[in-house]
Structure formats: C-alpha cells, structure tokens
Image 1 (cartoon, one colour):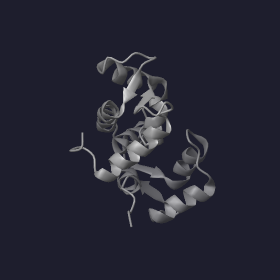
Image 2: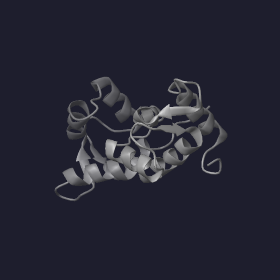
Image 3: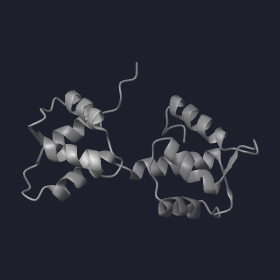
Image 4: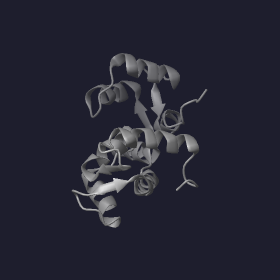
Length: 153
C-alpha cells in the first residue's frame, strides 16, 4: 500500500488508527472502521463498510489490522470522487442544462441543505471563488475551484 499513499498520509492514517486501537495490539474493532475512515476525510456508507469487511472476510464483530485498513482506505478513496459528486448534484438542479446557477440560489442551498454553511462561510467561499453576490455562477468552474487540494505550506 505504500505505493498508493505518501509517507505523510500513512503517518496520518496510523495516528488516527492508533486512537481507536483500544487494546494497543495494532487492530481496531470493525465497528470503529466507519469512524476512523470518516475522521480521515472519506465518506463511506454503512453498506460500503460492510462490503470492505466482506471482501477482507472480516465479521461485523471482528478486528481490522493496519495493513488491511490501508487496503480499505485505498479502495474507498478510489471510489469517492467529490468533484463528480458535486457536479452531478448541480446537474440535477439545472433544469435548463445551461451549466449555471444563480449565486442567491446556491447560497440558499448551502445554508439550508445537508451540512449547512453559515452566511459568513458562504461569503468566504464566494469571495475566494470571485463570485459576485448577485451573479451567475458557472458551476463547473466553481466546482473545480472548491475541489482543488488545499495549499500545504
């Protein structure tokens, strides 16, 4: 798995993994797998967790060692594509298929649906994306901007 992850990623994964290694034996309980994976930025569903465990032949009450965990993380990260998920959500609301959304409509969605943002958070997001509050947003360009990896100083 080292070929799929950077040393920094492996170190971060190991640190989080070890927080849930209650017996200090290099293993976590399978019931904690979803929590550990979500802490590390993935968004597995319960069904996806069950599939990961099934593929590795681990029961719901079993334990996952770190090397198996890395395999599961790799598979989970491969199947998640936030950029496409965001674009698909935009396309579902774009009845005219113009590739655009009103800033006011996007603000309303971001502050009322799902993981709600505050108005200040939306203001900051719009400022970074150079969106005027009364403007029209090209959602492909907007999605590209919000899914760029964070700057690592």
